Amino acid sequence: MDRRAFLSALALAGCAGRCGAGSPARVSLNGAGATFPFPLYSKWIAEFQKVAPDVRLNYQSIGSGGGVRQIIAGTVDFGATDVPIAADELVGARGPLVHVPVALGAVVVSYNLPGLSAPLRLTAEILASIFLGDVSRWNAPPLVSLNPGVVLPDERITVVYRSDGSGTTALFTNVLSRASPAFQRTVGAGKIVRFPTGLGAKGNEGVTGQIRATPGALAYTELAYAKQSQLPRAALLNRSGQFVEAHLETITAAAESVPMPETLHVSLVDAPAATAYPLAAYTYLLFYRDLPDALKGDALARFIWWASHEGQAFAPALDYAPLPAPVVAQVERALSRVTAGGRAVNVGH
Image (tube, rainbow, N blue to C red):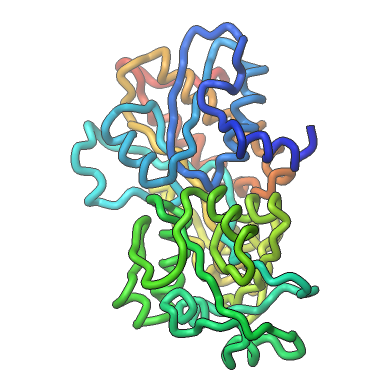
């Protein structure tokens, strides 16, 4: 199955309870959270089932906010988020949580303007004005001046945004809040914010579907979803003053220019490398450092070890960048400190 068919199947069917169906399993792991990495996680689950038929993994793509809530509530074995868990979200946690970066992706700005042959150039300041409703037409002077030689239509911009709790939203609004004091005051940054204009859609899948169905639409979404939907992606102005498109190389450049701390979570927004894409991001698995069930703990550790090593080979074909080697080493150290059933987890190596 090629990448397009694979991702289309995911959009229609999802993965919960289906990946690896029919294989014998001694232990089942349930996870939920970010839609940002869903295509990659689904591929990993299917491939991991081949090497670990005793483990059944189920993943619900419900958004980062839902993933955080479910891991805190203890209704899943692992959560998934694109932004680190905030202090106020830790209320009710039964113990310390571990963030493990497992891949790199990018938030892109996509639009529905047929006939344009080159990517539009956009800045965070102009995007803030668009999402505030202050720049409301495609041929507004700020957009025209950024894109000389491009004929932009005298047409209203229809903003599309995530309606669910989303790490993608948190990343995007972080950038806009940094660039625009007005946006910071009016909307702010977070997984759930109130935009003053536009249409809401659930999940990255819903956003890309809304863009395709709405002439004149503009929205933020994850790179893999935009590529699968054959949507154009804007070139964004980075910290070094360069307009950069989201590619594996520009995502990797962002990660390699920002050291990963021992907390194992870091922002790549406006990374300093000259070639860095300004909206690159790690995506994380989230789980308790001390796992009560030894069988489940070992199975989860085996999966994370496999995903951060052998599983990285599947990332580029699905438009995610592999982890830098130093980060893989940090993941290994983090797993060595995880316990299950009163002892260190066994990753099978």
